[in-house]
Length: 356
Image (cartoon, rainbow, N blue to C red; front, side, top):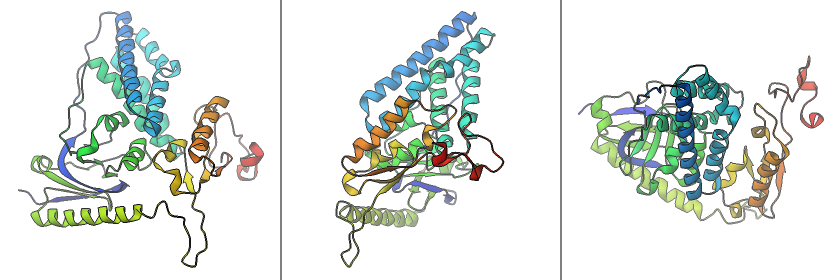
């Protein structure tokens, strides 16, 4: 056996997992070009229909934050602004797979290069949408992972996470990924250990390393491939200690917060988007101290219904507890095209409450 391989990453969802590795890297399947542009268009329409049907089925089986993520993907797939460029490319002579990949990759770049963490994290959802349709086009299906496996690779799709049975354990170790991604949020709410940012080399280990057991420490952000018996024992002790600390902490969550002298302390949560409250029991806090609104402002301005649904979700969750919503922090170093204005000194100009 080779020496153990130890890699460092960034914790995204605390916890410990011991199990076999499962490679997330997709197997490239060939697309069979059709005879005419009309056939290519039909192939893409059929694939989009298959992907939307799969999402609709998943939505029926989920709720809360997970359903919100899937509904976002479904809305994107049903949006002509997203699918239109692909159909235009097919009309110009491109095969369906190349047309779809080109159209979605252009959208993904826009998300990846955003100056806001929220939109950069949504790039994973766009890649998920792209790959679901490509799998349907090539009639490819994702391989099944063994129970308790540690998924590793560049990134993991939200739908792949939601389709996985985590009841037998397991975890996630990613070369890239983001602690602000939808999958990281889902992992935290479901107690699935996850680390991101293993780097470009990541798990480029020997076949012997990849075939053996792995130890995922998502409390400190590390993974060990091909561990020694002593390392396995030490890991299991750390895992047991973490579980005991977590259980002890859970007993205090519902108690009123206060100082040792008896002064009551109000504890409110800080959220960047409505889905953040999905994994929080409202009885364990005193409402929302700050709700950001930047998540609403992307390439287009949100309409009234979009804003209403976002605020209503949080207010219903909070029940009778207070929610403080911050006026959109746009302008200055965070311009929103078509909304904020360019000025000589934008930090003193039309922004924040003045803009509103």
